[in-house]
Length: 223
Image (cartoon, rainbow, N blue to C red; front, side, top):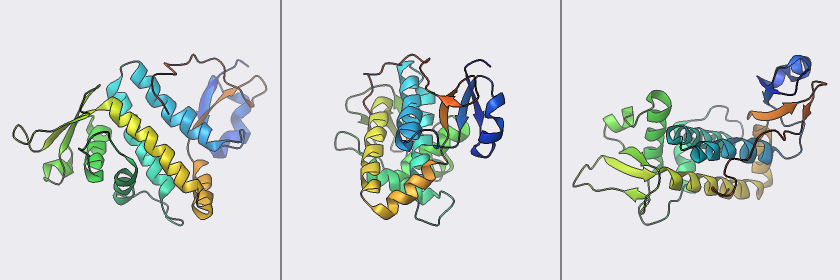
């Protein structure tokens, strides 16, 4: 069997790893001891960095919003199974901090998330109803948020690079907060096992070290 990776859910790992082609993305952290590194640093953050490094800004923005969804999932109260809009907006309001005085509210990030994930655009039901401003994007900008209500009171321009940095830093602050509380830490650790992670599959059908992928601008985007 060739070295490689493939996509499987956790429930099929034990029965099917032996016949996996190529590469494996599995919903489990049983093969390595650091679920934060598996799922977040080598998963969510690395994928965003790869898109930014290749100037794939639409894909990077989509992955940032998907990453915020994942953080909202991790931060849900114990006993809650489904992520709600309020989980997403609360996480953004607490952990996404842009440089400069102008900030964007969690409900506006949620509207932007819906627009990108559902239509790959900037208009959402929330923006059409006047409940949030639309967010457009530039690769880099200083200031990182550009807003002039005399031009369009319902539209903001946001630096994608700054959004990525704010998300990465927000993730780090969230994890520090979560693992400082033993009760919340146990909830987050359990939920991390539901986030897909990528493994190299060796000839015996077991996960091994993945050393085949080149680094993508490893110094360009700080975690």
